[in-house]
Length: 369
Image 1: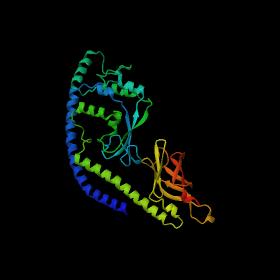
Image 2: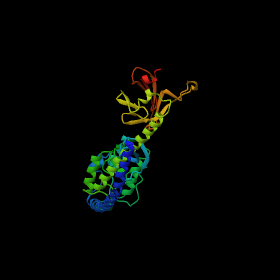
Image 3: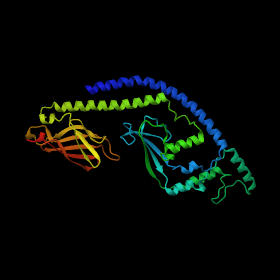
Image 4: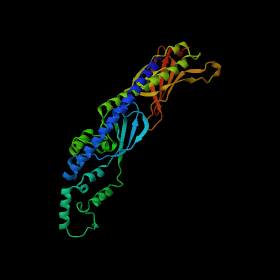
């Protein structure tokens, strides 16, 4: 009942915040349009003034490419996957948690990008274009591309850039993840991957080339951001309260069954834990099991009694917890407690016989005849 009341209070707060969120985001939308206009103007001015080859910051870029964004739950970048993938160009707002999957270039690939052969020329630059016209007049020959690899980047910038891309085709690369918990500055995975997750370098690059403006998508209204973060926290709290209600109802159903002994009933509301290999394992009979903050499952019941002549429905020597956090590339975590007779309630050992499947040996006077 306590958690049901808590969940109702949280829902009331959420219902009150959503209209405020919509109003703040409408203002945010207008502000983004203003930023977008300023950004276009700043970029246009920059393109005219700058000669774009490989700038110092360009040389420092890790040049990772983006694969996708994978969204996670509970505000944790390395948390349980939600199954919501986003494209590399989509804006990731501050309330979202997850990770960008980025593809690292090989050393050879990166060397080619950063070498003098990979110089990129901005043909739109007025000064450089003029310089190119002078050189083109001085050089003999027509506009045909040379048969060898010596394409003039001034005369044929598009062909030159295309040639550099072709040289990198087929070079093997590896993927890496850049994790982000919620409550962060908005970004796109394209940007984050290009700078290898180095937000300081990305920010410096933006400030150098676009002043204090950006394209608008990254702008967050202070009120809208605050409300989104508050909603995110409340939604996490409500999920926890709802889960507690579900677990409590399930525990109540079990405890009301006639064959549950008083000794096992007395365990309700208590948890038992043990430290092993830098992890703290904990299980709470009739409720849940955890490895630090990672769920190993919720209570699903005792084992089933296979000897009908014994009369009892349950095998009290086995407690089961299932449906925990999903392992990366594996199953949902689960924990089985093997109960043996002992003088006190205590975890004796913890094993992982198969991937993300845990077995606890637990002694208790509750099972002693």
